[in-house]
Length: 206
Image (cartoon, rainbow, N blue to C red; front, side, top):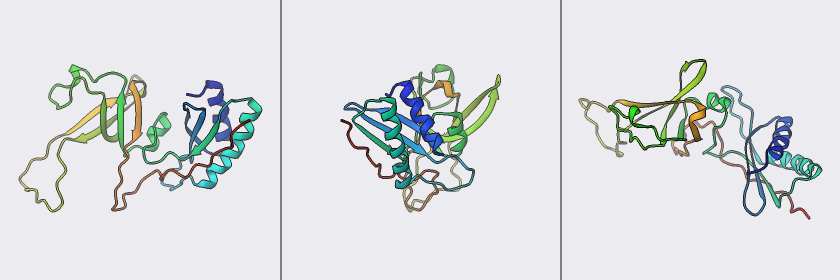
């Protein structure tokens, strides 16, 4: 992971160019990977493209050199279909989408009564929704069904009673990781993120 000072420098540069900073990651070998996105505009379809990545790369190469940041390679890309959700703004932006959620701690026995959830479970997939605030703190929930998906051409009896929906409430402080579920729908499901753009790479430093 990059240092906080490097993260701050990158964040200031990216936002100064009119983009949102999604993630900064430093991998073994010195690769500095920066993920950017378009600022959220309700009902607007805006996607990061190769030109956006090139623009940010050029500016970051200059800024990081001035700051004396050491790295072997810089990669700037769009978030892709499994975009991480980190801030309250991210959750507002992607309310209604299917997400994968990992909690810091298992859900616990108290929340399992009357449900199919294991007390040790930490990972969940469901549709992100707003929940009622408590004590002035924003709460969220994911909702899902344990109903198995029907096979193509399978007829479902009208008398069949569907399984009840499951819901899990949480705050951002309880999350270890949250991402958009990487679901590909070949029927053309509308998505709020575009596939990752080809990331331009900065030259190796001397």
